[in-house]
Length: 316
Image (cartoon, rainbow, N blue to C red; front, side, top):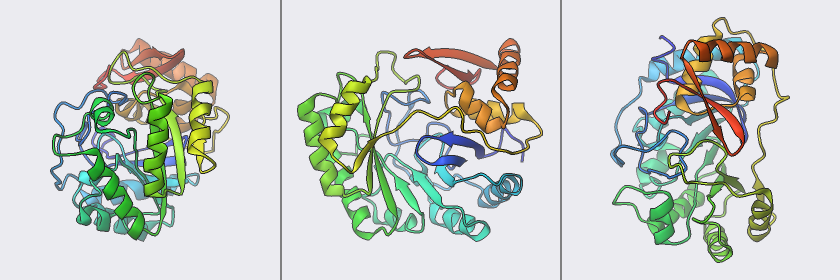
């Protein structure tokens, strides 16, 4: 399977999951949300239709190939370019991946599909589920997540409650805070009350650290994040930046074939490229400069940080 066809990417350094080997279960921007902060750009058309998108045998072969050359993977993460629970065969994919590795399987999801009992049943064998909840009122929900017309906030919360009631693994709930959208103190307090209904193992507070879908979307500063942290209480944490010193051993023959699929899926920093390609920072700088000169990578600056995207990235 060629690198451009592969649904498997990384491993990449994840702020939440350590060294994460990504498995992209759906085509680019196949999603039930059109979040204003999405690092992949706008969703052309939201959907809640579940389909068979993945070739399971190819995914298993590709994951096995990567794991045979990398001993540093902390999680296999079902995520990528859209909402992974729209893949109707997600239960079988989890089962097959558990058959080849004991590495924990995580699911990065917007949480919108868990009102469906079939979806909840399909993720029961995952080791960790990382859903999101960004709003405490329907008005803010529609503004920040811009969901499919059939999805309402209360339905999403009820789905997460039912997931918690039946799911034996870890639930780490992400809350994405956006300046002047969902960050005023009254709304954050309401949001914390909703989170109490879901009973996650952890609440992970995030803000806009990568170039977003909409240009006027802005992050919170550290002080405001710490104010929110106090409201959510001892079960919450602020998701830290990627530690640039975290580089692990590994050998990858074609560095470009690692970097470009990664940068096509999301904007990445030089440190993330370095970790994914297992290169020292000076070598990574040379590689990135060469890819920029060739027109294959583009540089973007957001909130004072430099990111790189593939020239064919949907949000370029």
